[in-house]
Image (tube, rainbow, N blue to C red; front, side):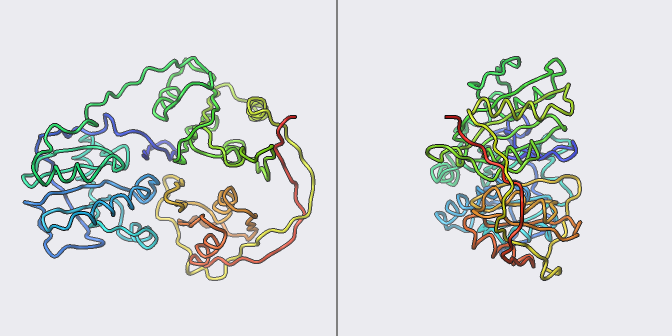
Length: 400
């Protein structure tokens, strides 16, 4: 799930617990709609309808990843009195950029006044975490609160048969987690919300954890220059995002290190100019790797702007962020160079951009294959051409 904070350039995920004041069995707040965007029903009255209400945002990877699941659920139910509604607080223009790339079967709406998000959230500022799903019966009563991945056909069937009361387990979860904040053991399973507490705890000067994980989500946040969290990300991404270094290859006996996903968290209040070098040394030591550097000539894919009119200037200036959903990378407020640098983590060859373009844009790039990447870029007026350049080549090699 994603959480948006007012901290500069913070873009991360967090659990729903404790963010909403609505309760199971209580009347649902009013759903205020300023814009009907997609799949608009003939009957726009919500009274007397069973409603699957999905709170989402264009910058939220888990929201977009949940769309196929919600589409499947909707296809299972064909009845006029059950509405699947996906609600955002963003402009229709911004929402449409995602809708052109991701197929929503639900009724897509916006409440730009944020009244709905506030009423279903903390009552003051709104929702802190996305996505969130709320089931409302035909009498306007809240019957279920949770994440879309937890929603099943059986739960919705119970809703429309009026037998769902008391079946929700998500809303009763505790908001606190017991965590040894002084530990730096790599055996510790650290949730993002726990790292936020570590970040806020002024008594913790240094914290570091690196461990293999099966977490499928690509969840990242930067709280300050020397406070990072990442889960479900590759070692190459850790180098790029947190060490500001490009790794070309990782060489080990079975190649597993290239595809391995990691949980990485780091906080260092007393950081200096050499801190990232020491952090890199610790990472290499824990993984049993050494770094090799050499200069080579290599073939790259030169990216050029062929049609500037197709670029989409960002509509978000408060933060920059990216998310990974169903094989598509959603970049918000990124330059072309920044987008391509990150995309190189997933490509089998290197994209290179050296034009003097300082624009900030939004992109949705299909990263499944090189052909899909190039096709996605072409949709934004970017073309590619083969080129040979001389460059520094950095490898991480498994110690023998």
